[in-house]
Length: 338
Image (cartoon, rainbow, N blue to C red):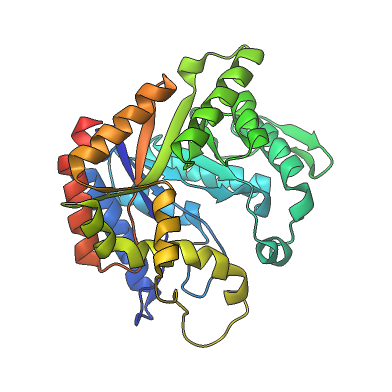
């Protein structure tokens, strides 16, 4: 099927304290995604969050590679400017070897000031850092000596080993025009969750930049991820999943405060009617499976190029058994039709 699953984040549910269980369930979800026929599974990165939002995507990707056989393993996304580029190249190459070539390296800029400060990165030069990282990685993966001298990174001549047997595909997560155009010039795809009108605009930017760079658009991936939740009706679906979507969204605003907070993990306040209206406006398809399929197909028809879809249908506060039910229903009722 042309449907991926994610974004796995290994966060603690209310009342839980055992991160070992969260990571065990992360691996089990990837194994189940492969069994159900999903084409890909995706992880997501942040740091210092009180519920343990996953900070180490390539470590986890190695574990997923060992537990699975065929499914694509994507990072959605690694916050590249927070990482030493040589170490990033080494770790990604190692995962690619462990997985037999199944890693897709999704990269993004990041935005949280406390993450940049604590990890010794400069928030204000993150765009320049990304440009240089995208120059460094392909050179590093050749296994041949190279050096790099830029405004952000100054690297001595080294050969990065082990090397993957082929360059690792990179996709860029982001919504701003510079990020989309950077992806079209320098990478193999975009990983976007914009509302449909915005996504159409992003595709136009990418196609324009691909043309300017004399690159074949058939070699470029457009990956769109959104919350997908099958239910008998939209209203019932939001009744069932609304508070879980709300906590997932609210937690982003709580990330910086939680970095220095002590005590119990904090979760979202009660969902209000205004909050729910805001959530419904975003990239979320909730309702009958046939309706979700129709809307996904309409996205592909509207932009006029192939699209890979990813169900952002991992809800950190949802019980594990319910999560498995959602995965199975999407795999049976949506995946085969998109």
